[in-house]
View 1: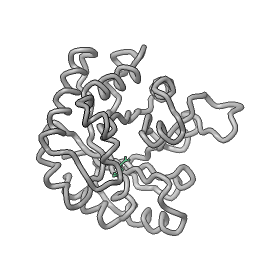
View 2 (view 1 turned 90 degrees about the horizontal axis):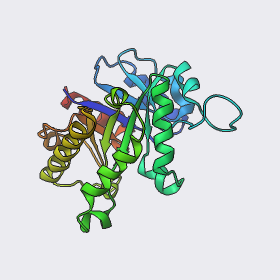
View 3 (view 1 turned 30 degrees about the horizontal axis):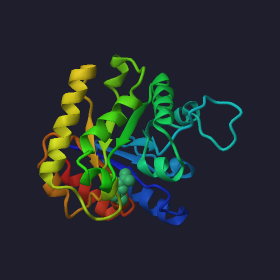
View 4 (view 1 turned 180 degrees about the vertical axis):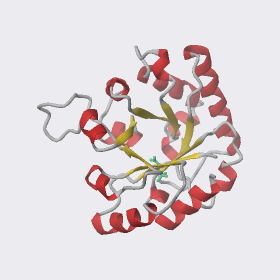
Length: 237
Ligand code: PGA
Protein backbone atom coordinates (compact mmCIF):
# COMPACT_ATOMS: atom_id res chain seq x y z
CA UNK A 1 0.00 0.00 0.00
CA UNK A 2 1.25 3.50 -0.80
CA UNK A 3 0.33 6.71 0.99
CA UNK A 4 -1.59 9.32 -1.05
CA UNK A 5 -1.38 12.97 0.03
CA UNK A 6 -3.55 15.51 -1.82
CA UNK A 7 -2.29 19.08 -1.95
CA UNK A 8 -5.19 21.14 -3.26
CA UNK A 9 -3.19 24.40 -3.17
CA UNK A 10 -5.52 27.37 -3.88
CA UNK A 11 -7.19 25.67 -6.83
CA UNK A 12 -10.80 25.23 -5.73
CA UNK A 13 -13.56 27.59 -4.70
CA UNK A 14 -16.33 26.73 -2.27
CA UNK A 15 -18.85 24.87 -4.45
CA UNK A 16 -16.24 22.67 -6.09
CA UNK A 17 -14.67 21.84 -2.73
CA UNK A 18 -18.07 20.96 -1.28
CA UNK A 19 -18.69 18.48 -4.12
CA UNK A 20 -15.20 17.04 -3.78
CA UNK A 21 -15.51 16.68 0.02
CA UNK A 22 -18.95 15.09 -0.24
CA UNK A 23 -17.45 12.27 -2.34
CA UNK A 24 -14.23 11.92 -0.37
CA UNK A 25 -16.19 11.75 2.88
CA UNK A 26 -17.73 8.46 1.68
CA UNK A 27 -14.55 6.46 1.02
CA UNK A 28 -13.17 3.87 3.41
CA UNK A 29 -9.53 3.84 2.36
CA UNK A 30 -7.00 4.41 5.11
CA UNK A 31 -4.00 5.53 3.03
CA UNK A 32 -5.15 9.09 2.36
CA UNK A 33 -4.26 12.54 3.66
CA UNK A 34 -6.02 15.59 2.23
CA UNK A 35 -4.60 19.11 2.45
CA UNK A 36 -7.38 21.49 1.40
CA UNK A 37 -7.28 25.27 1.84
CA UNK A 38 -7.58 26.19 5.52
CA UNK A 39 -11.05 27.67 5.10
CA UNK A 40 -12.46 24.34 3.95
CA UNK A 41 -11.21 22.05 6.75
CA UNK A 42 -14.67 21.59 8.23
CA UNK A 43 -16.06 20.26 4.93
CA UNK A 44 -13.97 17.12 5.40
CA UNK A 45 -15.26 14.73 8.03
CA UNK A 46 -14.16 11.25 7.03
CA UNK A 47 -12.67 9.39 10.03
CA UNK A 48 -10.52 7.28 7.71
CA UNK A 49 -8.82 10.27 6.16
CA UNK A 50 -6.28 12.49 7.87
CA UNK A 51 -6.42 16.26 7.48
CA UNK A 52 -3.25 18.09 6.59
CA UNK A 53 -2.43 21.76 6.28
CA UNK A 54 -0.54 23.29 3.35
CA UNK A 55 1.43 25.53 5.68
CA UNK A 56 1.75 26.54 9.34
CA UNK A 57 2.86 29.65 11.15
CA UNK A 58 6.37 29.67 12.56
CA UNK A 59 4.87 31.43 15.60
CA UNK A 60 2.92 29.92 18.45
CA UNK A 61 -0.65 31.19 19.07
CA UNK A 62 -0.76 34.93 19.74
CA UNK A 63 -0.47 38.33 18.12
CA UNK A 64 0.36 37.30 14.53
CA UNK A 65 -2.34 38.66 12.23
CA UNK A 66 -3.30 36.39 9.36
CA UNK A 67 -1.26 33.42 10.56
CA UNK A 68 -2.47 29.98 11.65
CA UNK A 69 -0.55 28.41 14.51
CA UNK A 70 0.06 24.70 14.98
CA UNK A 71 -2.00 24.88 18.17
CA UNK A 72 -4.97 26.29 16.24
CA UNK A 73 -4.65 23.73 13.46
CA UNK A 74 -4.36 20.88 15.93
CA UNK A 75 -7.50 22.06 17.68
CA UNK A 76 -9.30 21.77 14.31
CA UNK A 77 -8.27 18.12 13.95
CA UNK A 78 -5.34 18.76 11.63
CA UNK A 79 -2.50 16.34 12.32
CA UNK A 80 0.04 17.02 9.56
CA UNK A 81 1.35 19.89 7.48
CA UNK A 82 3.39 20.43 4.36
CA UNK A 83 6.51 22.52 4.96
CA UNK A 84 9.01 23.99 2.55
CA UNK A 85 6.89 23.55 -0.56
CA UNK A 86 8.78 25.01 -3.53
CA UNK A 87 5.89 27.33 -4.38
CA UNK A 88 6.19 28.93 -0.95
CA UNK A 89 9.96 29.13 -1.25
CA UNK A 90 9.81 30.73 -4.69
CA UNK A 91 6.75 32.96 -4.47
CA UNK A 92 6.72 33.79 -0.76
CA UNK A 93 10.48 33.71 -0.21
CA UNK A 94 10.39 31.14 2.56
CA UNK A 95 13.88 30.11 3.58
CA UNK A 96 15.17 26.78 4.80
CA UNK A 97 15.49 28.43 8.26
CA UNK A 98 11.73 29.15 8.17
CA UNK A 99 11.11 25.53 7.25
CA UNK A 100 13.32 24.36 10.11
CA UNK A 101 11.34 26.47 12.62
CA UNK A 102 8.01 25.21 11.25
CA UNK A 103 9.19 21.60 11.59
CA UNK A 104 10.07 22.26 15.24
CA UNK A 105 6.68 23.91 15.91
CA UNK A 106 4.85 20.95 14.38
CA UNK A 107 6.86 18.37 16.31
CA UNK A 108 6.35 20.27 19.59
CA UNK A 109 2.64 19.84 18.94
CA UNK A 110 2.92 16.14 18.07
CA UNK A 111 2.02 16.96 14.48
CA UNK A 112 3.72 15.42 11.45
CA UNK A 113 5.71 17.63 9.06
CA UNK A 114 5.78 16.67 5.39
CA UNK A 115 9.00 18.24 4.17
CA UNK A 116 9.17 19.05 0.44
CA UNK A 117 12.58 19.00 -1.24
CA UNK A 118 13.66 19.05 -4.88
CA UNK A 119 15.82 20.61 -7.54
CA UNK A 120 15.14 23.10 -10.35
CA UNK A 121 15.63 22.15 -14.01
CA UNK A 122 18.88 24.06 -14.10
CA UNK A 123 20.17 22.26 -11.02
CA UNK A 124 19.19 18.92 -12.56
CA UNK A 125 20.98 19.75 -15.80
CA UNK A 126 24.09 20.60 -13.78
CA UNK A 127 23.92 17.25 -11.94
CA UNK A 128 23.17 19.00 -8.66
CA UNK A 129 20.04 17.04 -7.69
CA UNK A 130 21.67 15.01 -4.95
CA UNK A 131 23.54 17.95 -3.45
CA UNK A 132 20.46 20.22 -3.42
CA UNK A 133 18.13 17.61 -1.96
CA UNK A 134 20.50 16.48 0.79
CA UNK A 135 21.37 20.10 1.69
CA UNK A 136 17.68 20.93 2.02
CA UNK A 137 17.11 17.95 4.29
CA UNK A 138 20.15 18.85 6.39
CA UNK A 139 19.01 22.48 6.79
CA UNK A 140 15.42 21.52 7.58
CA UNK A 141 16.51 18.97 10.22
CA UNK A 142 19.00 21.28 11.99
CA UNK A 143 18.90 20.76 15.78
CA UNK A 144 15.86 18.49 15.63
CA UNK A 145 16.14 15.38 17.88
CA UNK A 146 16.84 12.16 15.98
CA UNK A 147 13.96 10.56 17.81
CA UNK A 148 11.59 13.19 16.35
CA UNK A 149 13.24 13.22 12.93
CA UNK A 150 11.93 9.70 12.33
CA UNK A 151 8.37 11.09 12.35
CA UNK A 152 8.97 13.51 9.46
CA UNK A 153 7.64 12.53 6.05
CA UNK A 154 9.83 13.64 3.14
CA UNK A 155 8.41 14.45 -0.29
CA UNK A 156 10.90 14.50 -3.13
CA UNK A 157 9.40 16.94 -5.63
CA UNK A 158 11.56 18.02 -8.58
CA UNK A 159 10.44 21.62 -9.12
CA UNK A 160 10.51 21.25 -12.91
CA UNK A 161 8.02 18.42 -12.64
CA UNK A 162 5.41 20.23 -10.55
CA UNK A 163 2.35 21.06 -12.64
CA UNK A 164 4.17 20.44 -15.93
CA UNK A 165 3.03 16.93 -16.82
CA UNK A 166 6.67 15.85 -17.07
CA UNK A 167 8.13 13.37 -14.59
CA UNK A 168 11.69 12.09 -14.14
CA UNK A 169 12.51 8.60 -15.37
CA UNK A 170 11.63 5.75 -13.02
CA UNK A 171 15.36 5.06 -12.72
CA UNK A 172 16.09 8.67 -11.68
CA UNK A 173 13.35 8.64 -9.04
CA UNK A 174 14.58 5.30 -7.73
CA UNK A 175 18.20 6.51 -7.57
CA UNK A 176 17.40 9.68 -5.63
CA UNK A 177 15.10 7.69 -3.34
CA UNK A 178 17.95 5.32 -2.51
CA UNK A 179 20.32 8.27 -1.98
CA UNK A 180 17.87 9.99 0.39
CA UNK A 181 17.17 6.81 2.35
CA UNK A 182 20.87 6.00 2.71
CA UNK A 183 21.60 9.57 3.85
CA UNK A 184 18.87 9.39 6.51
CA UNK A 185 20.08 6.06 7.86
CA UNK A 186 23.69 7.19 7.95
CA UNK A 187 23.16 10.64 9.49
CA UNK A 188 20.09 10.25 11.69
CA UNK A 189 19.61 6.48 11.91
CA UNK A 190 16.03 6.94 10.71
CA UNK A 191 13.92 5.32 8.05
CA UNK A 192 11.50 8.11 7.10
CA UNK A 193 8.48 7.72 4.87
CA UNK A 194 9.47 9.01 1.42
CA UNK A 195 6.97 10.36 -1.11
CA UNK A 196 7.36 11.36 -4.73
CA UNK A 197 5.55 14.49 -5.98
CA UNK A 198 5.34 16.25 -9.34
CA UNK A 199 2.71 15.61 -12.03
CA UNK A 200 1.46 12.35 -10.52
CA UNK A 201 -1.74 11.38 -12.33
CA UNK A 202 -3.94 8.43 -13.27
CA UNK A 203 -1.84 7.75 -16.38
CA UNK A 204 1.56 7.46 -14.71
CA UNK A 205 0.57 5.99 -11.33
CA UNK A 206 1.01 2.35 -12.41
CA UNK A 207 4.54 3.03 -13.57
CA UNK A 208 5.36 5.01 -10.42
CA UNK A 209 3.96 2.22 -8.26
CA UNK A 210 6.76 -0.05 -9.49
CA UNK A 211 9.31 1.98 -7.46
CA UNK A 212 9.61 0.07 -4.20
CA UNK A 213 11.74 2.78 -2.53
CA UNK A 214 8.88 5.30 -2.83
CA UNK A 215 6.28 4.95 -0.05
CA UNK A 216 3.61 7.20 -1.56
CA UNK A 217 2.82 10.42 -3.43
CA UNK A 218 2.19 14.11 -2.95
CA UNK A 219 -0.38 15.05 -5.55
CA UNK A 220 -1.38 18.57 -6.61
CA UNK A 221 -3.52 19.03 -9.74
CA UNK A 222 -4.87 15.45 -9.79
CA UNK A 223 -6.03 15.82 -6.17
CA UNK A 224 -8.60 18.43 -7.21
CA UNK A 225 -10.57 16.06 -9.47
CA UNK A 226 -12.43 13.57 -7.31
CA UNK A 227 -12.71 10.76 -9.91
CA UNK A 228 -9.04 10.85 -10.77
CA UNK A 229 -8.02 11.18 -7.12
CA UNK A 230 -10.07 8.12 -6.15
CA UNK A 231 -8.70 6.15 -9.11
CA UNK A 232 -5.16 6.92 -7.92
CA UNK A 233 -6.03 6.00 -4.31
CA UNK A 234 -7.48 2.67 -5.49
CA UNK A 235 -4.33 1.90 -7.46
CA UNK A 236 -2.27 2.56 -4.32
CA UNK A 237 -4.07 -0.04 -2.18
P1 PGA B 1 1.33 18.58 -9.16
O1 PGA B 1 1.77 19.28 -7.80
O2 PGA B 1 0.85 17.19 -8.83
O3 PGA B 1 0.22 19.45 -9.70
O4 PGA B 1 2.50 18.55 -10.06
C1 PGA B 1 2.47 18.57 -6.82
C2 PGA B 1 2.80 19.47 -5.66
O5 PGA B 1 3.08 20.66 -5.87
O6 PGA B 1 2.79 19.04 -4.51
